[in-house]
Length: 189
Image: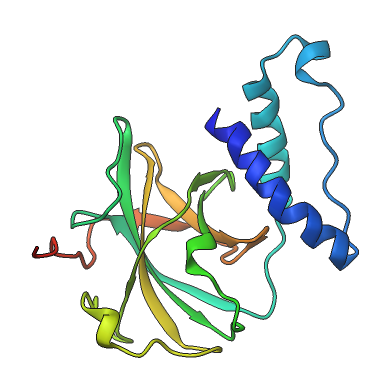
């Protein structure tokens, strides 16, 4: 059901973008749930995996994953059974005013399957230190560089990741998930 909802969300985002950019949406599988004897979730999985394999690499924005790691610190994400937290230390450059970090999605590194969205976002210094009290810090304007920690809840079996944004790959090559990286302390209330 989560996959079907993800397709609905992506269709609301991608169809208008594709239509206004002159691109055509990827073709849907020829069979539907009713005529193939499969469930709607199986059809949604087929559409999602076919679409994910066709994601183009985004041009105009430079994205560098410094590290991805099993995250051990505070996050407002609370992983369910069979899931874990992954921290991604990432730097963005050459981006426009409209970069919305909430729309960055984590993909499984080998399949490009979407496995995490709506990351917990924390600003980092250029040397990779988390700036936990970033409300008092000026975020860089368009163009960057902008270095952030993105924390996602992902399936436990995930070994490598890529990043995507609004229908395109931010990173073409997978990054292996390591063990070490910065973490946040729980906020003091």
